[in-house]
Image 1 (tube, rainbow, N blue to C red):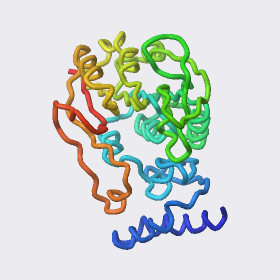
Image 2: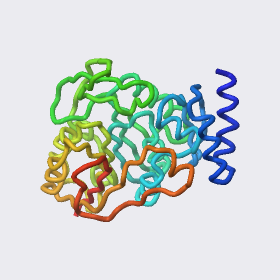
Image 3: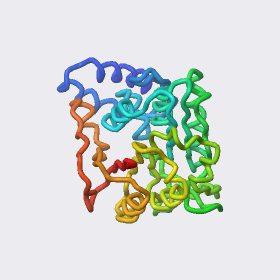
Length: 286
């Protein structure tokens, strides 16, 4: 473990400072080495993690996760805004948003897995300058009040944990389910700037739980949804009926190659969501 940690730290420095041809060779030698870490992101935020996990590994080595979407966050979110992060995982977007909304803003993070929510809370606490802006709800966002089983994905990609179990997943717990409308009962909806939804196939249920208050969201409020194929066309249709228009998609790229080359697939302006593949679709309130 100590050797892996040392080689990982050296690799991390080389990946951030050397030419692209060298970065590829370094990555092949370090990415698979498992060890826990505490690291600083490119935005100066601190995160605990473990390099076994896909997202956490990229955060450790590159200081980034989904750079194009993260850049959209940086350009779209302003001081004083409210941001809702549904399916917050260990907190990449929660922490980024907490920094961007400033001292007068607020971030609502929703994470269904008790295990992952514990890691999320630990990462929020690791950043005391922004921690008081964040509220964490350990529950599933859905279309009703009740409870639901949460299935934990394996350690290689815990972000795939879901209320829709898949072969090989382990049932972690029975967790509360609450509609977003209920979770946002004490939120000034007129200040909501962005709602990010990444819930591994439960997107339609989350959006249904938002609809009762969607009319109170301001013009320009954005809903960014990672759409599984099973969620089409239900999610776009529901959001369109609530006054949102699709403005484009962010391709999901989980390979290291764009990070190593520092060339990322751009946001695609379109009103038509591709029928296949996984994308983050951006909807903006008219």
